[in-house]
Length: 166
Image (cartoon, rainbow, N blue to C red; front, side, top):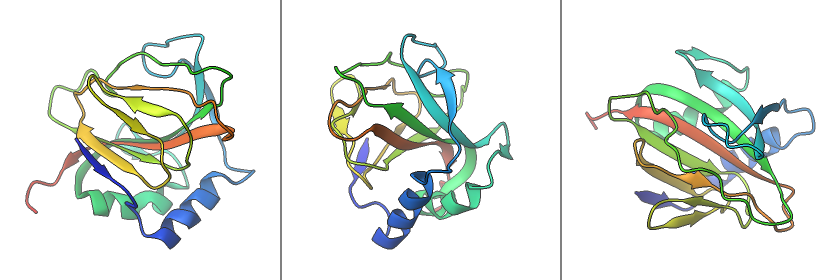
């Protein structure tokens, strides 16, 4: 696992956050947090890329991140928004693409500061704006809600095959 603080150039990151947190940015409701529908939790998502195609007009705004990650083949990229809860909710452990047999990498970029975490078996990573956590895609992980002053916990989730010919 690799944790990188200040992953993106500050100006680019701030512009990206401004777009994603805009009042007219489209979010779509999903029951459950992952593919296992761990109800009663829910989240809002915005799919940028899946099933081999661009799904959002916003995709191009995120392309510099793929270059910085050295992406060879993009599998999926989406934004997740989990609303604040009164008490902390820990979601189910999962892998993002459970039917993917080949090795792949998962990267999570946190878009705002809050007291929510990404949980791993022996570690947790706090949501800190512009922090990127990168790990093997077959590693089980879970998210939590936040309970602090932030109205929402927002992350960019990327699943990809890395370019090995660096």
